[in-house]
Length: 465
Picture 1 (cartoon, helix red, strand yellow):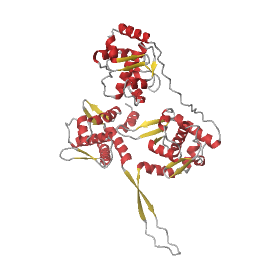
Picture 2 (tube, one colour; picture 1 turned 180 degrees about the horizontal axis):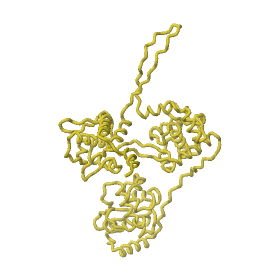
Picture 3 (spheres, helix red, strand yellow; picture 1 turned 90 degrees about the horizontal axis):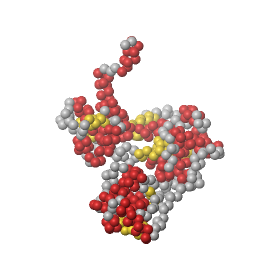
Picture 4 (tube, one colour; picture 1 turned 45 degrees about the horizontal axis):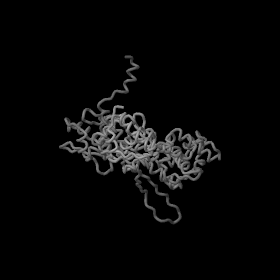
């Protein structure tokens, strides 16, 4: 290998001294969060901070890494059960966060044993430090020189301690720089000035208040415009394209924006604004502006400043849900269809009539499936009733809520059905519109119906379609 190549690759080499320096730094960062019992090697996680489940698991595994370096816990198998007992979290509550850590390649799984990846330890400690530790900022005020005028005696140089979270400290520094040359230079790229921004926004302490330009013809337009403006301002002022949901709602509230149904509205504009969930186990969420959203936000600002109309997002009125197909059948035709359906599918007609009530105005279940989970019960019932409506009543789509109510089955929260994998596969329309079985849904519903007639039970998972 040439000397030039060796010279380049030399940067990758480390000696023991560097490794010890790294270890010393990691131990220093770990001290606020964990301790290791001298005799047993047990990991004690600090109770001073409100850690979520995934954070507790990370801290515990970091502690195990250090204890093994000391010579403790050498042969210990760190299974999910060991982690669960050590951090005092139920196994069912741990499985999700632990699986997420493995998928994100923060934690390594070897068989049933888990371990933290060495090269990710410092990153995780930095995240914990940013989130929980308070940084102390010291502001010094110097003693003013005495003047000839008689004044009250002043104390000598004093030190005032102000405790700010790391995020609040950064925000304070950013606000101090807001009117500086750097901000002006950045705004030039978008043909804006600080004075332009202050004509639309007011910075009051830690709040961004909208002054004008966000009201629309309806709440939907107001929600989108105000959110775009605030997220765009947050990026211009503070360099962040993401804002905590609670903080955003507070900004909107003090600006006079109505908050009813705002989350539902913003979901429909995900190409502009993304609603991000927090870590598993955390209730914190945030809103992030996309590159397209930021572009539209800049256009909207310029429209407000220059009294132009280049903002091209349309706000159509809500489309009404498709109505279900009405049932139109005579009693003679109904009897004929039940008979032919039973014969064609090798079904006991008497058994069919004992479990379902067939009337010319509709159908209902006489005995509902044995199922405790509300969503699964709803899907099973709708599939059984749906296939009979399709094959006997010749009705392609139906009102799911009415169908369940007629059978005295709980019809609450039908809007949650489309988040279920079985519903998504077997139905082609959302629950609040006219529902319709897909082709795989019809095939599987027929299999379920035959099982139901035999045992009064049916399973969503036993199909091969």
